Length: 170
Image (cartoon, rainbow, N blue to C red; front, side):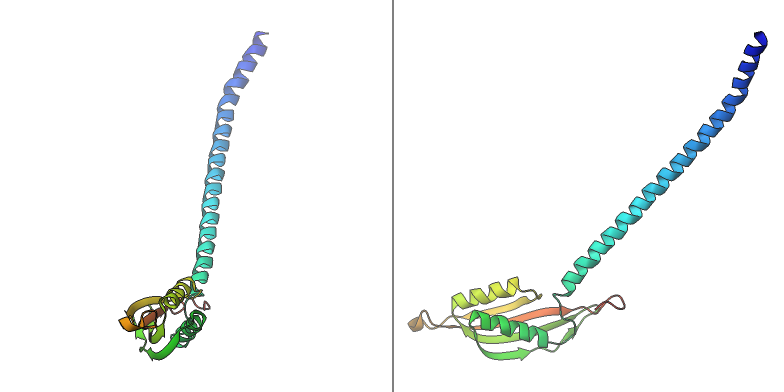
């Protein structure tokens, strides 16, 4: 029986370091796998974030002109003006101004309008699918004898053109 106990103790004494090293190796593999999983999750999250940003960028890009010319801005403003009931008298296009990474496009409109129509026009501009900015608004009220008449308005609208940043993105 002493020999059996001695043999058992020796087996445990020899197997314990081997088992410890094997378990330690498995723990290292588990840590490595956990690290790889965490890295992969971070990569997938970054890819999802970039895809979401690109979708948002495309939504914004659809609000801007696709070319650096004023025809789109003029057409959009005239359409909105007609919806508001404006009586356009003059359209003056400004030359495009190129800056480092974008081009400013602007046009000045002169028209007569009631205050209600002017409010409607400004609301239509604000809610438009296109990006337009009112840079200047000058309202001359009618003479006191003509209260309730149409006001003379001079308004400068602008937008910006950004050339595609990536090839194939338009």
